[in-house]
Length: 101
Image (cartoon, rainbow, N blue to C red; front, side, top):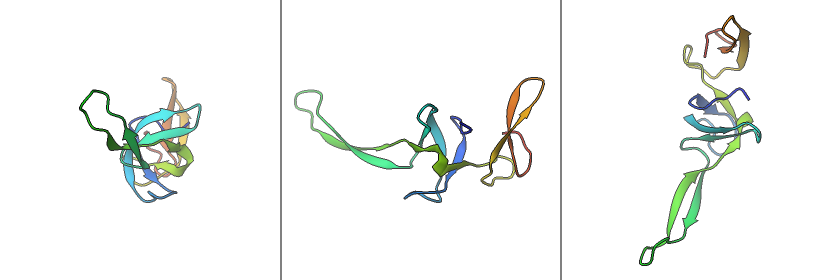
């Protein structure tokens, strides 16, 4: 999976298309990502203590990583990710401007 935690992404499909946000968590085996403020679902919480009320909480839900595209920090545009092998190891690069991500 080419998207990592902390990356800024542009949502390219779905109800939140066009939003830019930060990746909070990545689920590589499932191919899902959790993005801040995107794909918000309402979750009904039960009261935990006596006298406390139940509530409806809005939480982000994971979605397919293919619906997001990484934004290059140098050219500030959505770009595909490539890899370059160096002496230190593999690094991710922007395929548009060849900058390291």
